[in-house]
Amino acid sequence: MAYDKFWENNEKVNKTEKTKLEKDGLRILDDIPEYAKNGFASIPKDQWDLFKWAGLYLQRPKEDGYFMMRVNVPSGILSKDQVEALAGIARDYGRGVFDITTRQAVQFHWLEIGEIPDIFNRLEAVGLSSVGACGDITRNIVGNPIAGIDPNELFDTSGIVKEVFDFFQNNEDFSNLPRKYKMSISTNLHNASNAEINCISFTPAVKVLDGVEKQGFHLKIGGGLSARPFLAQTLDAFIEPERTLEVAVAVTTIFRDYGYREKRHLARLKFLMADWGTEKFLAKIQEYTGPLPTRGEEPVGEWNAGYFYGVHDQKQEGLKFLGFNVPVGRLDADEVFELARISDKYGNGEIRTCNSQNLIIPNVPAEHVEALLAEPIFERITIKPNSFIGHAVSCTGIEYCNLALVETKERMRSIALELDEKILLDVPVRMHMVGCPNSCGQRQIADIGLQGMKVRNANKEMVEAYEIYVGGTLNAGGEFNEKLKGKIPAEDLTGVLLQLLTYFKEEKYAGESFYDF
Ligand code: SF4
Image 1 (spheres, helix red, strand yellow):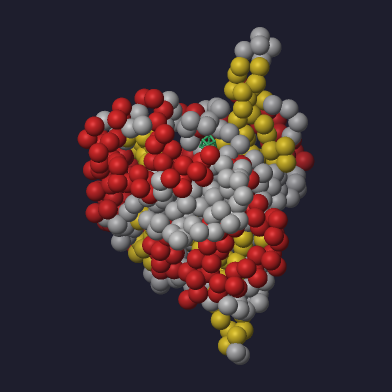
Image 2 (image 1 turned 90 degrees about the vertical axis):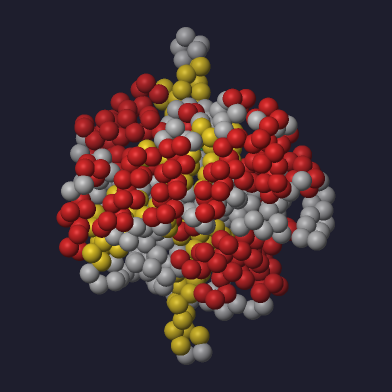
């Protein structure tokens, strides 16, 4: 009965919707053991797309039968056992590749169908799962990567993220949404969760209720990137922490029952929100939840974009957390094992992932920091990266992604390294590269966004090129970056960026950021 409103609110639905009604995406989990026994050739082509619900995409080219797997990491918090299990999967099945995504998840490549059951078992043994990491379903829930140790957070949200994640995980009442559905829950005062680009975000708020100051959330709805980006809008409501799940269920129910299913490119929650507006959306939520208090105050500071480089005090006296750069989010399995060993030796074994594709080692006693930093691995994975490589983000790109038009990860890495050799600025410039308009690398919120495409060169050959976008931020409510004229062939990109950054350096005031310029 969960989908009884499906037809009521949609006269026509697209082809994918009909497939999803015939077979719920999560049911692919029943078939995987059989496919694993019989090999890739036994999987009918019309079932390939359903693997997304299990967190699996066929990587490029699909016919070769290799899978990409995304593993959920709610709030980016991993225990030592979990880190070791992930490193083992990367080493044993994923040719050593271990990627941190822009939503705090972990991605593997090169997996074969026969290996998937063992990978599922290994994940389950440590309380992890890839289920729902892709597909038209609630994705990994982004949170404050320093939840519970953040001296400035309003309150610890790690338990709430876990509660909400567990509710939606593998829940067939909510496994057929109109499109992907992204949620963030965080009370980090510097918007570490990039709230405005999520479909639904719980953000820090305080309000006096019955004469007592309460800490809780504001609710932002309808953000999202891709070809038509929207910033989430704040509703006139205050959510008490104990009502988070109830409100999340109400919003997800609205998306499931009223979201658009006729055209896939118009199906994200952002389009429903844009049509309804904040008042109608809130009124509909309250049909499920009953009255909610009106908005309170927002104790927010400057946006940190998910960056935590350096050594920082925790809220627990005597303990430190350390923020490290992982160049364009890519580690190899041996490095991950080494990080697990080090975090266990000097901290409590935990590692946290950030949506800036970086990582944090928490819970290190102050007296152990120096010894930890002397470990050889921290020559590459450093707490004080050069500015461009330290603020370079990249999506997966043509190496593995079927939708990609161009190479991204290696190109972004080499461009950032070259810029670091050639130009020194007094402020960081965040650069995000994406291989297509889907914008997994979140190019719209970058100081400089680079979006790949194919163009014809003077010899009429198709070559890789990039559009350059400037001025994105999530400060002060947020603003997406704007396109500069022209398409730059890949071979000219570093030179053009160098010219742009030199102009910025020469014309800016001391300390002026790229966004303010
Ligand atoms: Fe693939 Fe495009 Fe996403 Fe990059 S932005 S990972 S190319 S779908």
